[in-house]
Image (cartoon, rainbow, N blue to C red; front, side, top):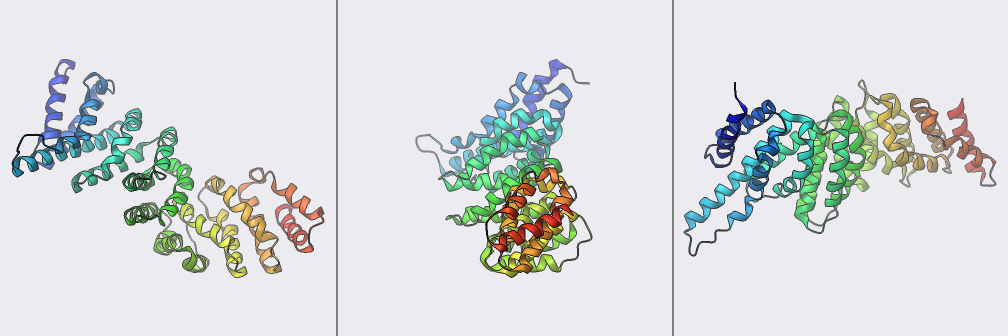
Amino acid sequence: MLKQEDASVLFSRLLDQLMKSDKYGERRGAAFGLAGVVKGFGISCLKKHGIVTVLREGLVDRNKDVVKDDEPSIFETRKKAWNSARCREGALLAFECLCEKLGRLFEPYVIQMLPLLLVSFSDQVIAVREAAECAARAMMSQLSAQGVKLVLPSLLKGLEDKAWRTKQSSVQLLGAMAYCAPQQLSQCLPRIVPKLTEVLTDTHPKVQSAGQTALQQVGGVIKNPEISSLVPTLLMGLTDPNDYTKYSLDILLQTTFVNTIDAPSLALLVPIVHRGLRERSADTKKKASQIVGNMCSLVTEPKDMIPYIGLLLPEVKKVLVDPIPEVRSVAARALGSLVKGMGEENFPDLVPWLLDTLKSDSSNVERSGAAQGLSEVRF
């Protein structure tokens, strides 16, 4: 059994192997060993033995790639650059293992290390970039609801940065959020997917490519087999809405659903349906309204739909007063399904709005739509 007095020597040996070993297997083993020993001695040893400081220094070791000798040989320059890359990779391997082994206990350090993790996504060395992706997946899988709230604003802010590398890194980390626990996933995806959709039109091709990959990651964690098979179609609808919105809606309506829809499925479906509700074509609006009406009966948890009410309800209201009677009828049924499926308490302003529209001096079309909507909601 290890004693506290042996900890310093053991940590020193593991960190040395982690950062300097020539063999990937040894560095990987040292990362696992480090995480296991930290868990054994307790989270306090991270600060006591300066472990996080060593890992942080390893991640910023990039600066050591520039050799400042008077006239270094090419061999020496490459060797020092490789040693520096090994340090960065080793630090990320440790970060991944600590996240997995310590779980939410390690979360305060995750917030501290996030800026360095972002930089690692655009590292020049492939092995470091791959280690960053694995570390990000491990980090996201362990984040609590509070952790998601702390991490998400920084990543969303990174999307507005002028530097394309920062944008690309933020997109990649947002994509890694697909590996969050289910409860956190349903909380963060409604904010993430619209932002990822926006970067698909970014001026830089690598940012666009990162957005595509991130959306594929979201699609990759969908558990509903029917939606899972439609992910390529849905991604086309998100990538090129002008050409593929109607096609995506047609495919969705033709699909027979046997299984319930999970949060990642909704995250890909709702932007396409929202776009369909805003189309000029009466046929497209009708199809989008049908899907809105079907959603509540298919979701795993009705509460998963709550983040999307503010997005969908205003558009369904507009379709409810469409000049074409058949379109109004479908929108009215969609409203009725939403209220019955999720409860009237989630739509506090809907009935008053319907009554006001019904009594107003507006056109017969609007009053007719309000009457149809009210009959579906209340009866």
